[in-house]
Length: 177
Image: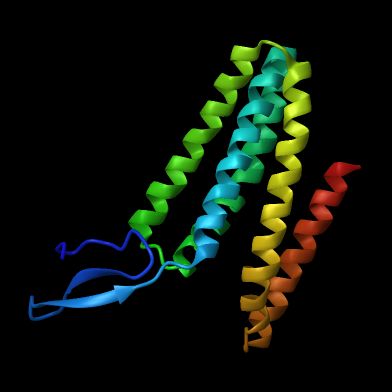
């Protein structure tokens, strides 16, 4: 087994060094929701790349506004994705590398848009991509994250989570109008 390594797939055996510097075999499992989150996040970032490049093709101002909106949206989103990866069994280093990989997919979306040279074509593709990613993130939140929130036994934490959820929903609804 590798020394001090991390698991890369379900059930991989890894070596772990204890305080006496003796290595013992441990087994670690990465849950499927972590991989589903990476796929959905990659597709979401591809859509962001489409949006950013397409908006800059329309005008500089539109591009800056779109980029700013996506950055504001992405910071808490990526923190949440990182937490999902950690709770799914990824190590911090594996989760960070995976997050950087999905971020690079956004560049592919931008390059794809620029290669097409038409915002009309990108708009048609983006409708399908956005529908898929919305469904994937709803699945992740309702099947994986929500049950964990419902297990919370401390009322103050439950209340804080509910307030954050409602505030996020209100903010998004306000921006949509």
